[in-house]
View (cartoon, rainbow, N blue to C red):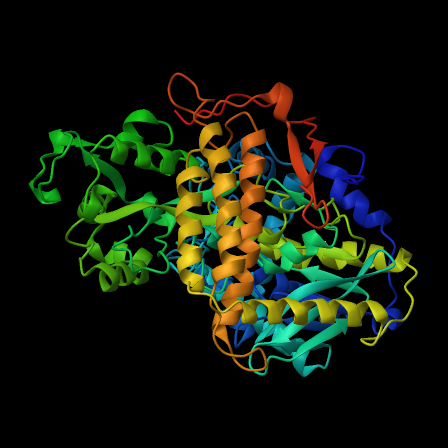
Length: 637
C-alpha cells in the first residue's frame, strides 16, 4: 500500500491558498452531469451535501435517522473554535494551529491542522450569515469563552446547544438544495458496504431500515461522513445508533485505517448510575470555565459536599496545573479524575465521581449569569440525577466520547481508495492523539463547507469514469454478500442478546483499552475479543426477519463490526510503545505521571491495511514531518 499525503509544497501558511490556485476545476455544465453519494448528514456530511448541491452536483445523501437533522452532531454542546481574536487577548491563526498540534501531543499532520485553523474564521462568518444564534455580549458583539488546552477565549457558542444550532443551519442549507432539485435525502437508510469498480469507489449498498430492502446506489464519488466509533465501549456519550459500520466496511474493501487506538475519554460526564444503563450523558467542557473540580483530601470521606470545609478539599487540577487550572486538555483532566478515584477519594455512588462546583462562580457573578450561560445543561443534569447543581456541586466522571482515529486520508481528504473521501470524525487527519474541546464542530464544517468542494472537483476533473449502473456485476455481487450476511445473522438463533455481548465487549475495552493501557492487558484483551467474537457468531439471537423493520438486526450488524474493530484497536495500542494524548500506556510515563512520548520511534501515523479474509491486518506508517513546530514534552503547568 502506498501512502502519499500529497501535502503541497511551500511555506505552511501558503499551502492551502497555493493549492486552490492550482486545482483543476469542473465547469458548471459538467457538474450537473456528476453524481455524488454522501453518507451521513451531520455537520460534515450535511455541509458537504449542501455545498456540493449549491455548486450544481447531483447529490444523494443517506442517513439512518428518520431526519437528517437528527444526526449526532446535534448533541455537541460547548462551542466551536475560531481564531477571530474578538477578545483582543492575543489569539491568531498560528496560535490556534499550535494549540491544536500541542493538544494532539504532536501526532497530527502540520499542513492539515494549519488549514483547519486558517478556515476557522470563515466558518464563523458563514454561520452568522446563516442566522446561527451565537451568544452575544451586551453591545451585540459575538461572545467567546475558553476551552481546555488554550489560554485565550476563542470558542463561539449558543448556550449549551451549539451543535444543535449549527446542524439546523446546515440542515436549512441542505433543504434549500433539496427544494432546488440538486440533493436527494434518503433517511432511514443504512450503508452496509462499499462498491469498488476498477479500483475506484463508485457506490454503496444500503438497507432500508423500514422495509429491509437492500439496494445498490452508484455515483462518481463517495463521501463518508459517518462519525466516530466510541460505541465500541458500549457505554459512551454517543447516541445508541452511532456505529463504525460504514468506515469498517470501507476498510475491508481496501481503505486504510489510521491510529484506531486514539480514543478520547471526556472528563465531564454524568457518572454511571447502574448496570442497567445503555449510554452516558455528556456535560459540556464549557462548564469548566466557571466550575471548579475537586475531591476530598481524605481517603474515604463520605460527608456531603457542603459539610467538607474548604481546607479539606483538593482542587487538584488547580494545584497540579496552575497555568491552565480546570481548563487542561481532556486527556489530562480524565486521567487525573481516574487517579483521584483510584486513590479512594471519589464521590457519589460507587465512589466513581469528582465534584464540579459552581458555588464560587454563582457567588461572584450571580445565579442569573450562570443560568444564561449554562441553563439547559443544568436543567438536563437535574432531570437525570435529581440534584440541583445551583445548590450542590455536580458529580462528573470520564466517559468515552470521541475518536481521533479513523480512515486514513491525504491532504485532499481522499482515502487510499480513489474516489472515496472521508470527512469529519470519520477520518483521522486533524486531532492527533487528543482532540481539544470545540474543535470537532470546527473540523466538520471546515471539511464540508470549505475543503471538499475544492478537492472533490480536482479528483473529478482528472478522473476518467466509465458509466456504471446498479445492475453492474460488482454491484450485484456486493448486494448478494450483504444479503448473505443478513441471512447468517438471522439464522444463528442462539441464546444471547446482542446487547449482552456488546456490553461484555464494552467493559473489556474500557478496562484494557480505555483511559490507561498495558501490554499484558492488551495482549489478554485480544484473545478475549476473539473468543467473544466466536460466541457472537455461534450464540447470538437476532429475532424477527430481514424484510421488515428490525432494530435487533441493525444492532447485530453494528456489533459484529465493533467486535472486529476492537481487536484492531488493541493491536494498534499494543504496538505503540509510548504514551501520547489519549493513548496512555502505563509503562511509559514521566516521574510526575504524565504521558511520555517516544519521538524517535513513533513520530508517525500507524496505518492498517485489511489482510483479506481471516489474515491479520498489515501495518504501515506515515512519518510526521514537523517543519514549523518542534515537538516538546507537553506541559500545562
